[in-house]
Image (cartoon, rainbow, N blue to C red; front, side):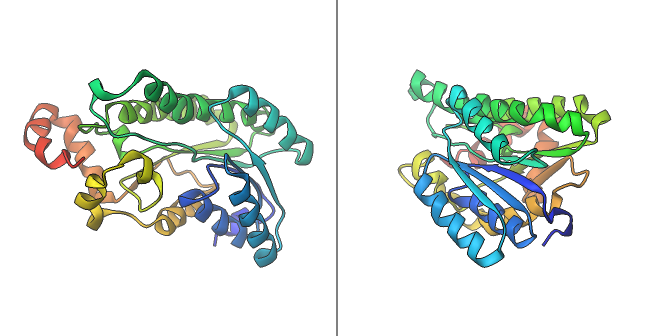
Length: 264
């Protein structure tokens, strides 16, 4: 539990399952009020009933496809009709498709960027003015280790997460004087439904199964960082060492690590 979260208003996108739902459970256990967003309203309503019954907190749910920026604006208008401000936003919605660059369709490319990048920016832009006015808040962007080290068959997905990290790092500097914390979360593979779309053949999951993170563990790290000055969360920490080596010795890393990284 995080004692700083009691009575705070927390928005979570992609909250219908995976780490989004686990983050919601831990926030509710800490006494936070929640606004849960996802495309699957039925799953959100089930989670709403669970959390309100178990933790006696306020939970609001809204159906939202973050790729639809008009819908983002409307839904956040509805949110601010219910709550006066957002203390924390967790931009968790995202997806990936593992294909070699020449196999990825333009529709798939657009789809990943619209959800992973533009949708994240659109949701953030909805809460920023009030956070700046109050000089308080925390923006948590779920990125990926893929945003630090691109791997074969994840060219487009890696590109979206590179963009998320660039946006997050710039945003952190912009908001430094406003007492608004900005955190990027860079996990390796997590055992969630993400791979039902990303890895249709199951090859990647089979190859990295022993390294996969549990969503409950990732959620604990994210919730533990809320309202603290945490710049990045890198999971597992040993995997992040690869990005350090990559920055220092990129050519050597790509030559030696090519076979190891080609798990898809």
